[in-house]
Structures are given as structure tokens and as C-alpha cells.
Length: 627
Picture 1 (tube, rainbow, N blue to C red):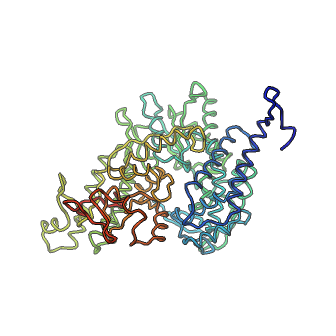
Picture 2: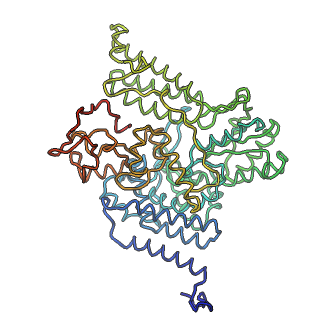
Picture 3: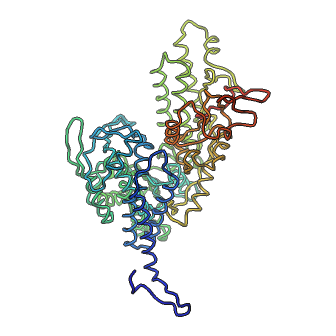
């Protein structure tokens, strides 16, 4: 310790340190903790304490965010270095890439994937942030308009490196982003962007004219030098190597990368938002100079941005027409991209606009947000395509194929005015199902077809069901308003920890049914196997996209007599459940199986036996996978 930093308190006679030295000692303690984790042997996947690892990494990220708020660049560099060199961060990055990510089985140019615990342990030994990224493998996917979108697929090793750098860069940038930028940010979603747009337009005196911004080929045309100039010096080396990595096209071969951020990498979404950083503040300042508003706090415009999609509200059409060239100039000077003047529209709110799949429009002074017509027709076409491709499939298989589409589309629009659209879609789906069933039995009567494929349940007469399998309906989905996140809040700010804990509790149980709520309440929203928190985003992706990141599953398997009871069903991460079953098998009882028995159950000879008067019927119990 530096002797100059030591002072003697004359009143107590004790030696006290300089506050700066105390702060540097805390950095050294965090560094020693990270090095201790690095120096040990790699833990086996079965014994890894993920709860403690997540706690340690989040603590480092929050300390980094606090240093960013204090504007202490030296401490910021220290903590970013700690995160990049931490073994815990490496383990989380490997788990995210090889177990959580939907592209975990998609290889890069090296053709390698890491799906088993042994392979993941080998990958942990190979990770090196100093290694230059391999070329990116280009694939093409079809967009809604029929055009092809290029995706750049890095190797698994490079994806892990990007995840490590993202863990170090995201806390710093999340503290600096504008409050109305929602795309690719933690704890934010399209629902927050739509809620902010509603707040900007719902009042009687709100702006009436809207600029629908459209950037021409945003991800493919971002200027590398302008983007790198916004980054900190310690981040530029790797980001430059990532951006300059060549592309291997299936037709053109090896292509040099001169512009754009490759879509498909883990770091690319963050860089895309960083490239647009400062747009809201600069445009509000320009609007104030153009005297659109009466003060700096109220410059006369409002901006809502989600990645490269953004909306600007103005009071008059003349102001909107004057402001479009200002937006185009800012994008050209600061990002190096062009505003598509052909696709950028100026719309009156009474004519309506489409944004993020929603239609925003005022009817007789009342603002209503509904599903966009194009998206409604798109989901009906998708369902028709599934039925056309499975004309001879079993009824149960058709139900299993359609349910994720119906539930996912319905849950995405369940925050707005969607009941009439849901009823319309249910009506069209029933018509498609009737034609599908009639084609299979052209010589049978309508009553015979109805009795074979449809049934009556409650007030509904046309329920498409086959034994325990029942087709979901959009009309049964509840409309639940979304609570918008407060603009300046960040999950990495230490003072916001209580806010996000309360928000997690609010959002976690809001969209679950009664059975699911009881199951989640048992573990307070944590995974029953690893003890880590399950975020509301996991539940949202599970409902909207049919994501398999979480599972409602039986701890005592059905083949051993386990029932779909609240005691036996738990919520877990998919990767935790796969690890548990690989270690214990699918025909074995868990440790202390009495924890998962109801009061009328007992275990006899390794099987669950019902000791009550009336044994439960399996078909009356809720399905544990979709409970």
C-alpha cells in the first residue's frame, strides 16, 4: 500500500486509508476473486453452482455501471477487464451459446458444435479473446415481403467471445442510452415501445402527425469508422476485428467486409443500437432550434425507437416535412446510412400507422392499438400452410403443430385491443379445419364429420379435439395491459435493484393461469433444479414464441405413477432438466420423492400409489408441459 495514501487520525490514533485507495482495494479484491475462480480446475457441469456464478457476474456488472455513473474511466476500464478475464463470465457465455441460444446446433465455418458437457469443457479450455475471429458463414432467410435477408453465422468459439465482450460492454452502454430506445436492451421489449407510443399520442392535445422512419439496409450499411469512434478504446480492438472478419458466401465465395454489422452474432444487436446512440437528444435539440416547441424540455417532437425502426411525432404536417431532411442528414453524418425517402411516410394519426406489428390509430378522438392487418393475414396464411402440408396427418399431430402458432400470436397481441381480431381469427381457423376434415371424408355426412373431429364443451359447440389434445383458441386469451418500464431505469444500476425485483414479481405471475401460478409460487419464481431466477422474459418467450427455455415438468415421471399435481410439477430451465435427466435417467425417482407427493399419494415398490377414495383421471389434469 502506498505510504502517501495512509493518514493518521489524531482523535483515535488509528490509521485510515485514502478513499481512493479504499476503492482501489475493492477492485483488487474483485480481481483476486476472479483469479481464484480461474486458477481452479474446471468444475464439472453437474456440480456448477450457477446461482452463485450469476450473482458474482451481476455484482461485477453493477459495480461497472456505478463507475460509469461516477464518470471514473480508470475504474471502468478495471471492471471491464475483470469481466473479460473472469472464469464465471466465460462459463455463463458458454452456457448461453451452447445451451440457451436457439442456434446452439448451427455451426460456423469450422463446422463445430458443442452439445455435450465434455465438449463444453473442451470449449472452455480453447476460449481465447486474443484469437482473431474466423470468417463468417453467410446464409439467407426469407423475409415477409419475399426478399432474402443475409445472416452472418460466426463459429461457436467466436460467439462465446462475443458474449464475453457483450457482458463487459452492455452495462456501460445501458447507462447511457436514451430513455425511449427499447430495441435489444435488457428488461425491455416491443410492448414497452408500444406503451410509450400510446403515451405520446393518446391525449387530446397530443401531436397529430407521425413520421414513420425507414432506414435503407441499416444492418448492412453502418459505417465501421463512425461506429468505432463511439466505442471506448479498450473495446475497439476486438470490435474492429469482428466487423472486418471476411464473409464466406455460398455463391460468391470469400468477400471482404467493409460496411455493416453481421446479423447473426451476439454482439451485433448491441452495436446496432450503439450506432444510433445520441439520435434522440440531437434531434430534440434541433427541433428546439427550429422552434417546434416552447422549451428544451418540450421541443415539440417525441421519438420512440426500436432498433432501426423509429417513430417521430410532430404537431403539424409542415413541421414533419421540414424535419425529414434533418433526420436524413443526422443519419448520414453520424451513422453513415441513408433514410429511405420512398418508404418514409408522414401520416396523420386518424389515418393510422403500423409499428412493430401493431396498428396505431385514433377513432373519434380515442387512440386504439390493434394487431396490424398484414400480420393478421400472415398468421392465417401460416395456419393454412400447416394444414395443407398435413392433409393426411393425425388430428392430434395437427393440434400439436397449430397450438404453438395460435398461442404465440395471441399472447403477443394480448396487451392491446385484440378481442375482435381474435374472434375473427378463430372463425377463419374453424372454417379451415372444417375444409381440412371434409376433404379427408368426402363421402361422409356433415354430422358424421362433426362428431368425429369436433365436440361440445361448455358454451362452445365447435371444439377441435382428439382425446386429451384440444386446439387452443385466441378468444380464450385474456387481455392484460403491460406495465411500461420507467425510461431511465437500468438493471445494472445498484439503486434500481429493488425496482426490478418488484417489477419481476409483477410481470412473472401476471400472464400465468392458476395452476402455473401455484407451481411458480413453490420456488418463488426460481428454477427448481439450479435455484436461479427465471426472468419474466423467459416466460414471455415461452408464451409468445413457444420457446423451450423453460419447462413445466413432472419430477416423478408418469411411467412411475407421477401425476400432474401442484406438488409434482415444477418449473425449470430446459438445460437444467436435461442435465438432471442425463444424470438420473427417466425411470428413476428423485431424491426425497416424498416432497413431490400430494396428501393422498404414497410410494410402494418404486411407484406412486393413490391412497384416497377416488383416483385422479389423467385426462382431467392439466398438461404439465403447457400447464
